[in-house]
Image (cartoon, rainbow, N blue to C red; front, side):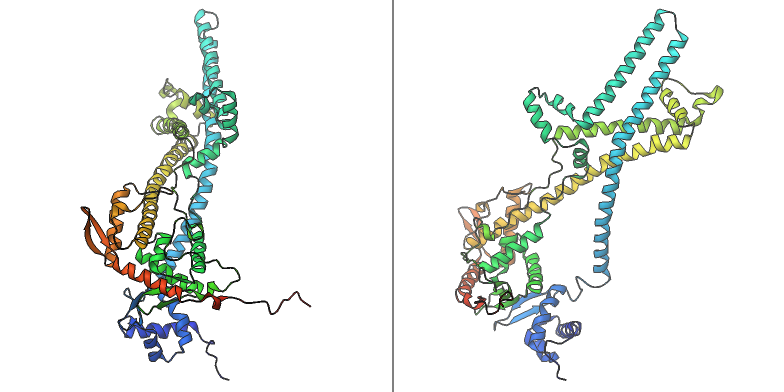
Length: 511
């Protein structure tokens, strides 16, 4: 039986192609691969983009206009092998671990906020009642007894007010309105309707409120595909960089992945410009053509929103400060009980060696309430609240540092997008200070310095000429201007009629 050209082992073909590149110092054309392997061109054309994506190929154009695939980093797979597998495992493990750890700590937060606050308050109340009873029993008839009784009652009232204070914070968060001085009833009621439950607000302080750029990859894909469908199915690296804000190397790697996923292929124009053609995404019933001489930020059909700043928390700053102060209760009580458990221990009630003094009185009450179990007091009242309080401060601190790094990276990407668009639209005379900095998303901490560095990096990558313009350094991106004009000619020569699906020749709903 004759074997069909499309009936082949992809892995076997890939292995043969890779061997050809290795034998030719990691560089070859499609014709070289066909000549060395005898493989049908359709098989090479299908598998070469996947190999280029997996091993990070660079595309070059020879003087004769031939496309040359180059693998400067060799053939270390990005997807297969021990190291990539370990990275994928670690990524999944880290994702699951963070989710599980976050869920457990959220439960712990609720337990600590309710349980331990009530527990510490109950111990304090019992200690006050015991003190009041002892005072009354020892001084039942004199005026001093009356004063002590009044002091005990006052202590009880203070403890009750503390409990009421806690309940208001938990259920209504009314304390924050008092702190803000909100006296107007209607304004107070309006704010109450918008206010989140206190536990959600505290989760926001500890863990944040999610990533506003979480759907970025999916959105980028839709925008790039829309650009292709409205620009005759072709795109250049410069245009991809102007749409996404990626660097030159990142854009090339991403376009290789797009070729695999959307059946694209690299092509070379008659003037030697590399571009990527995606005929498959053009075949559809609905297609809208838009101006393609440049990438316009005002065109919503081909415009990707800027990356947003990832905020530490949506809570008011004053609220977060108070959550930190409330956590100090756990630090104070936990440290107190842990210190006494380690220094005084069980001797607090041990006969003549008893240490029941003013500073250890509350510890002695707790020691009795916990059945005189030193390990129980040490762990439950000491170790647990102290560890919780440390994590309560540590997690937001680490997250704050990570957010600064992430926002700076996203700001650089947003600014690189502005630079790439400006250069693509005005390649002949680029003055870094003239590049507009969009404030629609997050910006770098020092946008002027970052802008200078990004323009200089792009100029080095594109071989731009350096000149002076009004005393300032200017760059002439001659190659960008040439390739832009060349691609305009390529697009002008494409007849989109060949992508039309035509009329219906069969309808399953027709008898």
